[in-house]
Amino acid sequence: MSQVGAVCVLALAGAGAPADDLIDAVVVPSRDVTLSFVQPGQIAEVLVEPGDRVEVGQLLIRQDDAPEQARLAHLKAQAEDDIRVKAAEARLAQSRVDLAKLTEARTRGAATDREVEHAELDVTIAEMSLALARFERAQAGRSYQQAKLEVARRRLRSSTAGIVERVSVEQGEAVNALDPVLRIVRIDPLWVDVPVPLARAARLDVGDAAVVTFPDVAEAPAGRSASAPARAEGIIIHVSSVGDAASETLMVRVEIANHQRRPAGQPVTVTFVDRDAVDEE
Image 1 (cartoon, helix red, strand yellow):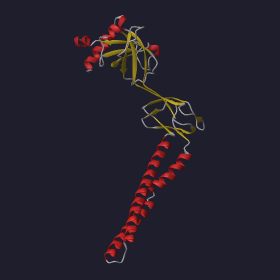
Image 2 (cartoon, one colour):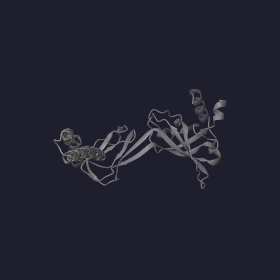
Image 3 (cartoon, helix red, strand yellow):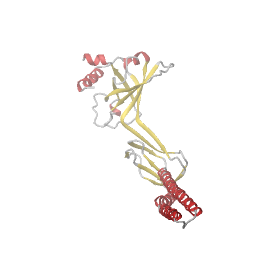
Image 4 (cartoon, one colour):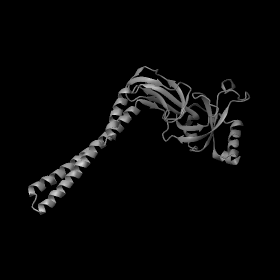
């Protein structure tokens, strides 16, 4: 929406909206993630605490992984070892040389068919030995990659950018698989899930404007004017496809920027602004 449109939206809201258009709702984080380990273990290190800002992929908590690290080192050495492959290649090369010599000798009557056949079989066996050595090395590489994944599972990394809300474990503590150990929330932007009466919701669509009014001055962020409740312009990002028959409402999700870092969980009122009204202004 343009700046002129935004001013019109706030002006319409500030001028007062019909009581039927004021809908009570609660702001919630746009992301709210509880993280767990997928296997039991002992906590070796906790790298964050409540209030810390984290980014996607950031290491948060690490389980003790000494046994996995030892196995990883062993498998890494196996995956990088090419001695058996080189030995098999050398044996195959020698077998081919022997076969060539015996084949040439047979033309002069210096070697029998049986000796040539044995030499041909030696070449076949050497080829199979080389293929097996290469296969075993490839398998060692796969086992090494699997071990790396097992080590990675001992490290809990953030799946979203946000703020650490809660840490439920301490260093040295044992945890079970899937126990909640850490919660991350993202409050910029905030979401407001608004139960809109069906008749009103029929006139709304994704991209429409909304005005969210926060609690009165006593609960407003520091620096906010005492003359009026805080207001924020939002935009509809989702309109539910299924209504609630009991309340005759449809859930509409509004997204608002939250540079002021207002906390989630606050009760608010929401006013939706029809596009026609904005265009007329």
